[in-house]
Image 1 (cartoon, rainbow, N blue to C red):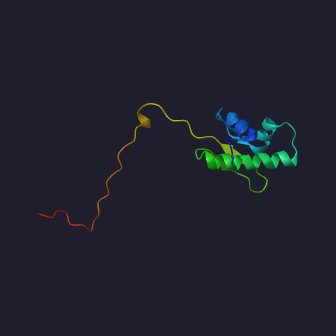
Image 2: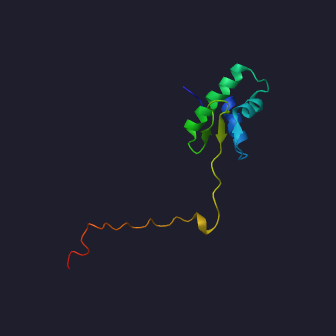
Image 3: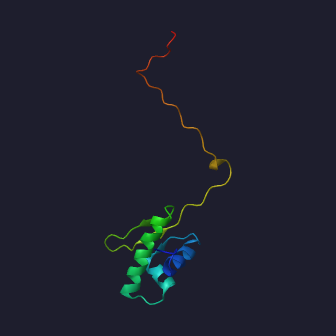
Length: 101
């Protein structure tokens, strides 16, 4: 059984709290320094694990020659824009206008 986040996951999460999009290469440098294949695979595995544990984060890229990037959640907007509006009610054209008419 796991006892929480591992060293690599904690380092990635602390780095992501700054609010910037980071690639797997940048996170690898933050976690260990050496760009070994083993460390890079470990960071990729930890990135996927963090996205499963924290769904507010997202992964982008990773296909072809683009690096896999971890994207932080969007910052909440302040003021009136943060209030939720009621959804508009749709009117069904086939329904009768009134039952008592």
